[in-house]
Image (tube, rainbow, N blue to C red):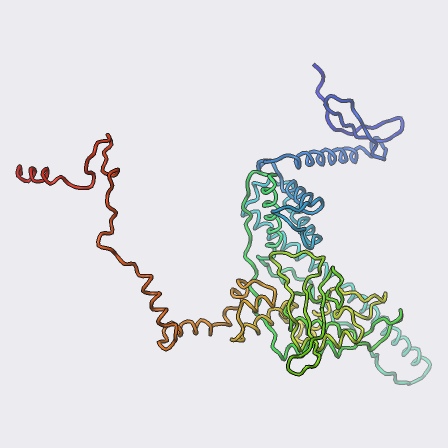
Length: 524
């Protein structure tokens, strides 16, 4: 009987002073490959670590090929590796998952955070307590990010303070030199002022948010569901999710929207023209156009910031055309807003239907297009000269803070929230039509904004009790039709089969024999 194999292991070749990995295969000769470094003593620890990592990776790859595994045999790392492999890197559409994941970079970032906490923990040990501990872990990461931001701000503060102290020292030296020469010249004070000192970082200032870990755990739950669907594991495990964030209640007024658009339109800053910096340019007018389209169309952020006046296929686009007015006989401009390009994927949850553009918006869009603008929300003064749509998040945050203060609750989604609220407040607009215009389900619209349609419920209540309505008679008839009418004999009559005994003989099983009952009474 042969000696048991030592398995995958490192090996040092003294002749060439190189470390190798040896992997014996069952029934096959050994083969090895060089790790590229030497040092019998200095490289030993690294070589064993390389061999261990290779063995772990190979075992994990083998587990990924197995099916219907127990949740006690599969680790969270195995689950996430399977999810990344089949759902992202080598995704193949099918009936259960017809589309690719959107924002895959964000998904991979959340999965990396999950791996950092759970690591090689068995899947069946992901309990409620561990999910709560993960929430504390996310809170610790938030504190670390806040600390890193504070350190950067403090480094900037120290740089500004050192520059000011240098100027002040130079001024004092100059004044002392003049005094030594007997001059009494009075100098103007320094125009620059010392920077405001920063308060020390306080970890307690970062509030603990229970809902902060929900998006990460939702990603883990999605990976579990995917693994069950493709029979990687036998059954699902319950992932405890913290509560959702409270729904946003802040909304804009018409005056607020006008202030935002006015502030963005009038702002002057530095931009680049023909590769040279130029001051006093209207660097935020593209944000004014974004705010106008956001409040008038109620579309989501990415459906506005990427929009184009040309049908490019991979982005939303605006179709402007002229028709003859039936009343005046003149040509008038019309438009249709396509929230999805022809090459973009349509998802069930994020609806993006096209809709007719309001007349007041069409006039602005025609004017912008005639000015040579291709992308209404693109920054026109880029350093490299490109005019492509970008992320407007930072620019809009600056406008909100300049307009409403640093502690404002305003975010970009407030435009969509405000548009839905305004439309729902119009009593004559049906809710399904509002939902179709905004690109959301009627259920979501009613659930979030039904409080603004209390008058609809009052109309129903008044209609039921109003005797003058034409449908009142029909309503009364319908009420009478729903009242059950009991017949003379509601019980089903017994059949011959029901009167058969267990032995097959014919006998009454539901009635009482009158002669037998009379004999019993006489005997009594």
